[in-house]
Length: 133
Length: 277
Image (tube, rainbow over the protein chains, first blue to last red):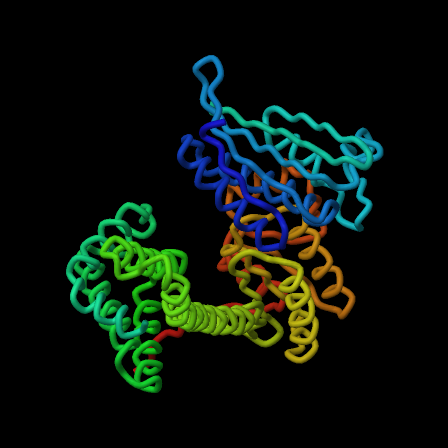
């Protein structure tokens, strides 16, 4: 797909790279500073999840247009162990790594659309988009 | 064979240079074009050519010296390494093909020629890669040290009041240092109030928040109070969206406001001294 750029997540510093990419694209699309912060934070959460749980994966940032509305989509893909119970993972305060457990539900609130697809043993794919209002 | 190659390069010098520059121009992408101006490119190409000729006629020692100098110069020019190594290969290919076209290299001696060419191309590539990588390694290790130095200082500002300004991304390593410096500093400076300033932290995600909350909890355990200052409006909104609970903190939007609050806790005040004659 055109208008898509990806960052491989292998080390903790790749999270910063993904974030920077996201911020730049968000700026290009025309998001305000608050939405830029929301988008970068969401990317940070998703990339960190990949780093912590899957070890490695990829975060892609896409510019999207629907019904004349511009937006940005984050696609985070990994081939990690997968999430056993998505409903539980989407609950506030649930964490298997001793964190705050606000990551996934937080991303859902930070973005406008949120899709999660995960199967045990074969990985997780999360798509989250935000539209310019 | 060395002599023949040498002769060929000497006589065909301008021709080779022209071909080479043409080929490399086609290879260079935007990244290269940005750092390499035409003039520099041509003058450096000439120098490279001289270097190769010097390899063929000067003593080994002198050549190594020149190679070292040349490689260092290239590194300073910030040419991409891939571009430089590609350049060397393209050069040897042009020479080889040129000599073949002129029937200097024939079926019988082409192995020999290949070997000779390789013999000076390989050490050259190795030396250049070496100098590149040592330069990079040095830069990375220096930056690591520099980063550690500005990682998380705890600065005592008044009796009992300390500030920890955080700047840049917070990773696990830094979070550890923040915690250590905070606790050691609080005990050492006998701080009663610690202000953590996050004005310079670009993104506060759940991990960063988690580390700050833990640090604040630990500070409370050693008997001091922790305040979070420098929360920019957009960060405030993302924290709310993430659903992070910072209720146990006193938070202020600027360091100045935090300082005022800290002084209030310490029952101190900053007053203007009236001038007396």
